[in-house]
Image (cartoon, rainbow, N blue to C red; front, side, top):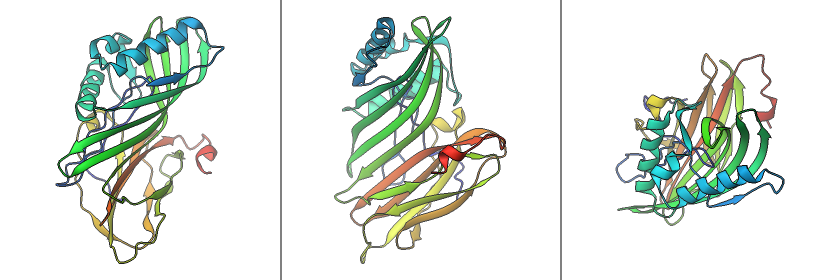
Length: 282
């Protein structure tokens, strides 16, 4: 699989952290993910402790008001992320994200919570939608994130992203696609990455490429080197090889047709071989 030297982006949602930017490909928009902030409308567990739901509501309010100082107040000075972000870099990616998207909407579901001696461990699933205005026309964003946050008192001390997918579309008729990718694979194992176009191509050629990048702090704000290729009818079909150690990777695809463009990126977790990856091979 084509490995760009630089990452396609970074993504996050919920009570995590997000930043979507854009791919510098001339007329093409850019996709960059970071971490997520708070939801537009939180769907909270009615049995959750009032103190926890109030914390989530306050984070929600700060994010929707784009009050970065208030939002960062909910993150510990010692905040760490499984992707290598700390509080300082988190601030950077959120600020960049908010500059590019003016009409963001966060909708978060509280999936699970557990009381701990220090506070709470919380799992959320969040959907983010928004539009970025470019000279070539609007670019629509749709992202989903499943994450786990560790609250110590009234601050998030640690965050792990369990699963994520983001999609950008532009044009009057962007390719509609289905993505087949496992959620996790063993170290060094091969995996299939299929991006299937739902509708017949007709006489319109389909251009595209696939990218495979390790998720690291160094890759969060960098842009990949891109070279589109003429694709066969039906979509993009690649076989990749997971990294040689446990990590998370972004597996991304760009599809361009006469009517528009679709960019999609999904997280692939690389786990030790002795850990079952059955859940991701559905």
